[in-house]
Length: 143
Image (cartoon, rainbow, N blue to C red; front, side, top):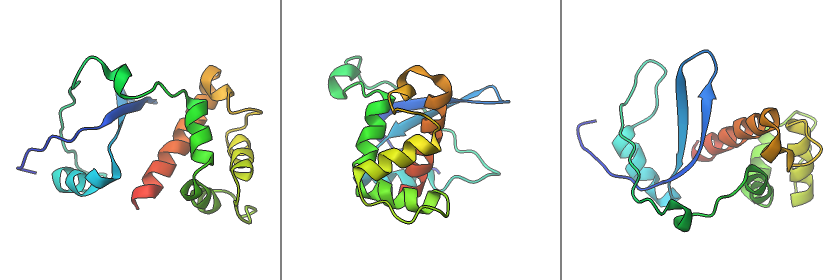
């Protein structure tokens, strides 16, 4: 892309890519910015790269966004009807339908092999499973 764009987002998470010496950074932007993101970056392709810059807008980031722990993020997702729809499509064929926060939470615990979503905060294996599920959900939202 030849045009430059500045898109404000919130640094939400990161993950290490196994087998490669890279770190994936997750920056969340408001849904209203989706057309600008698409115009600036286009669609990701497996055979190409789009170089971008990442900059901290201010050092008071904690005041802008609460520090949600992974369990809180999971709880918020389980309360979202769109997340229920995602779980129905993403989960096993045995998933007849998700129609409540309780059902979503139960399914998340099963899919991530945890007894409680609080394990996402203390168990790195559980945290990685949640991050992967949440990443798939984020990708599902934009398709």
